[in-house]
Length: 465
Image 1 (cartoon, rainbow, N blue to C red):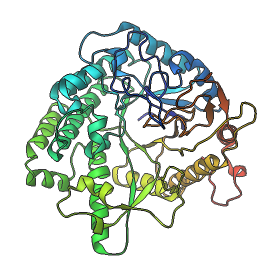
Image 2 (image 1 turned 180 degrees about the vertical axis):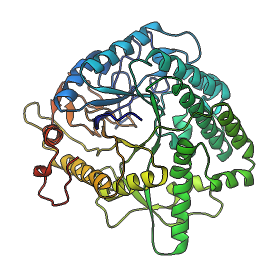
Image 3 (image 1 turned 135 degrees about the vertical axis):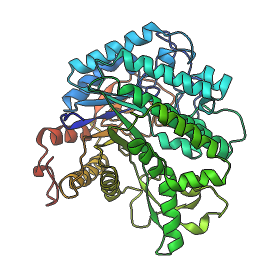
């Protein structure tokens, strides 16, 4: 992969930023019909980046960011998911990407971030259906070809391994059915088949790179009991390692394949194998991952009949050694380093931490700066561990992308769970004026990118990039 400047940037999805749910010829997605709740907003406005993206680009550029990982909305390009192309949608993203490039900000495009076109969800139950899989491949090829001269970096699926545990039903547009393990594996297989064809297609274009992405949770055994160690290892193998192995090598984990053979799922592996034969040039150029927290697995909480895909949910217990955010996520910067180093040691591909951050409730009084020292501490500690992975462990890391560095609704629609360096003036039930207001962390981040040296910390182990 061609050497680029180190990527410092912001990472988001379309439904959490754009708004304009019924403008520009956009069709409905499954998110557009979700209603507001007591602690959540609807998705119709988000932060209105559809109309205000240049303002956000200017904020990113002023902070020293040179990269933006965003999503191209499927239903903005093909309103019903599998029909006619909405040319207005293509023009919107052309302007968007052109202005990014003019601002000196490198675009990374994600093609699917869970916002299934509503029509395909209702008619076919989402990505469990082969027609929807093929419709997504068609959409992806249209977008890739159209922007092949403007975009070098592509991520076909956000957190693709989320399709292999319970969240996979919601994330894939699945709205009816028994939610069986067999159905979950079918959804997973369809995304892997789609990935192989899309990645192979990307490699038909010069100087374009594709990365498979997982949501990575570092998992520790609850004790020195060998059973705890085995269950933690198996959870990692099924939830994290299988997908990474596929992205890097085109192969599945032998342990996962054996489970599929024993549970009448081998036909799905045969479908994936057939797709790989047709699309041999599908291996990732880089590996991307999100990282927010680690967890502990207690084998005593797991039933021997549970699928390994469920071990993370069934066996999770608190880690008494780690602090916890107000939203219950345990803060583990060392786990971030371990994740990076293990991934690079095993696969030898460039690594992109594509999401990292901490959510917190914050309120602006309309005048004073928000003092978010906890966010500064979170990013400082995680970046410090990333630098150790580079300088001590020898990992090849191509960038660091914070999640939602301009406030956006959380994945559950809670605007008041804020990740940003920039406050957006709205709450769950009052849009207000959407004014962008830099927090204390914004200026810390700007200084760090400008200086990138030991003066930002008195710690002797704080490394320069």
